[in-house]
Length: 292
Image (cartoon, rainbow, N blue to C red; front, side, top):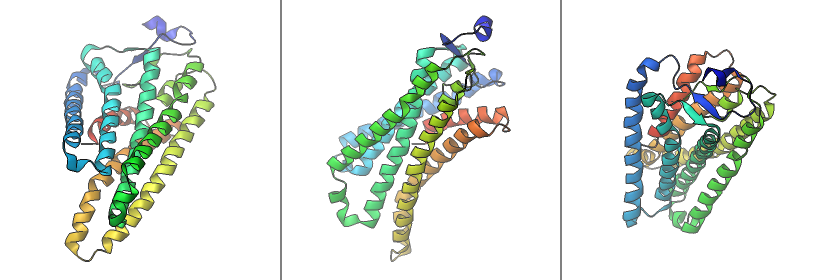
């Protein structure tokens, strides 16, 4: 292993995932939380899909979007957590170069997909609360299908350059990744070349996704809150806001850590390395937990 870490190479055959450096002795105990939450997430998401499929009354846009969110969560958690558990349980740190690129693609693709689905849910709540009489005519099954297809295409295409950019760089310093999974900017930081193209593209995707999605969600919820506060009774306001509360929690738990993590990786050179490691592994937990 030491040879692979010091020898010059263009494309390493494998990368070495370190898990959570400094906490190797606690990996087994940490894995209990990851494994438990992963099992709960699987059970919860499959339950959502099963109930929506079997209950005819739930065949409405909001639950269609929730099903899309459940599927994206299933894929994203499966792309990261099993490998993390193999590191914690069996010290299986090696990951094939191609497998690392594949994991990277799924992480960025389905993370962006969650953002797009949150926008779709915000649109559904806006129409349902601000234009309730027109909800069924505006968000028809055809419109919902087109929204879902647009989200999938946007995310699939925007994440596609990540593995191609990573493959083009030479890696002559090390193949050790100080995390539990392959993320684009983490792998790029190992390259011994001018990787500004990768960094700029990552920022472009970050701000094109968040820069479009967050303002849309914000405007939607401003209109929703105005409609709620105009309701005649306090009970009606509380009941209506309750339908949006969990969605708002999901939005905050998704966007804030993602945004902070991406910026600190690129600009937060004075942020302690331990903070980076804790944040990245915390994001892995959130990717399993937040939809529940």
